[in-house]
Image (tube, rainbow, N blue to C red; front, side, top):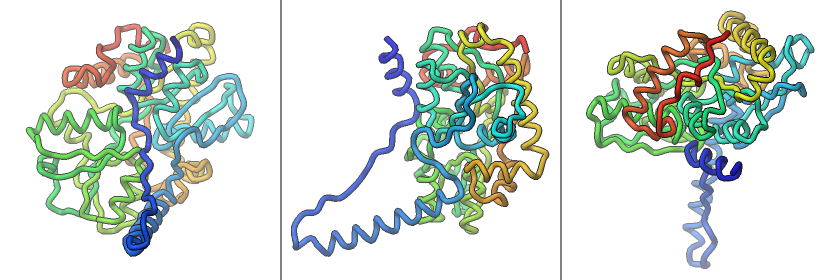
Length: 358
């Protein structure tokens, strides 16, 4: 049963990277092979350059601490909002006892929650609802940790709004997660029927496309927007998907939330409360303490602390709890559900999904 559950969850999250390559053929194809090899080397260099300041790879890439409460997060704003907790854990200053696992793919985090290998996790909002449905109410959401982080980035000056994506190819990431459903919802609401979405498994791959062709159009999350624009001055932000969302919906765009296994919450309510308190303090710190940019760099989320400092104000890192959390998140999930029920796992979560006791 557990194996079946994991299979279902993995199928709803982000697609796994597809590997491409060319096999050697005959001697009379040597010239073509040489050209292909040079192209592959160029592609690889672009990818390395794009990922230098955002150390992202598949699977768990970093573990911090060895405490009893196991917390998973994704590279990007969610982990940026935890750097103060990482630092306190390593220096024995935390109230709680934590083991943090950082990963680049939502599947790596969601599957570990489902299997009981993580107690608390910071995940895309729609996947939290999906996991609730797949586990028959086995998780609670305790806060919203990220607002809008999605932006359209391009060197094409003709692109200024979602309507301008008509007839265009848009490179993005997050298939099966919030970015896909948000973008499709906005395209539909703006009557854009002929935009082609080309999904990459990681944001660094999208950034590599922009590095090769600045007129390509991409939807990227922060901090990759700031990284791409810093690397390539011909790129700029065409529009915010958060702004586009507010133009067609009364709800807020919610990118990331924090969930806890219901069994863990039942048995360790004090530990969850402590985590929420420390998370809130860490969010306050990263948004207001200039030294936080160095911690973001030290923990390998963004290699360059200057770029980290520039990105943080645009990452919508927050800690929204209680009734405000429920109102914002339930409104957002309803919009997704009405557009595509499978985006939230088939049905909207019941009221017991929302943890309001804090």
